[in-house]
Length: 145
Image 1 (tube, rainbow, N blue to C red):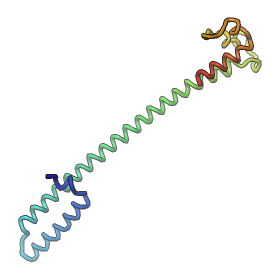
Image 2: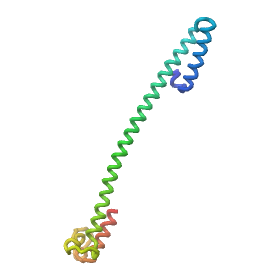
Image 3: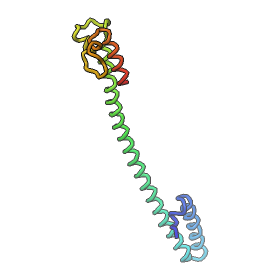
Image 4: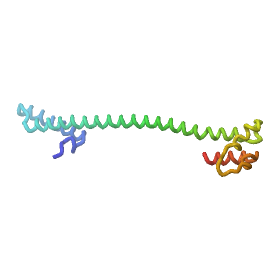
């Protein structure tokens, strides 16, 4: 048989306690004492009320712990996103500053940095040509974006 705390809500238990208390007070005024079964039922509902409040308290503690865990995970994932964003921005910045041909006055060694990179699928002549620097950088950028 299920307990009162399992089958009734806290509000139902509270209403029943109010009704039992009124009945007990009425019997005490009219007869001088309360019936044993009424007092026993009142005590059962008092115990059920305490059990229900304890369950609600445990539930609230569990939800607070879950909230704290979610907030810590959120902070951890925000840090990961910031790190990943940096991993995306660094190659973009590198490619746009290092591989811009004709727009900056860099030395030939610096501006041909992309062309000198060993990348599979490109011939040595293609990598050495000055016009291929931009193409290599564009292909590099497409790979990482």
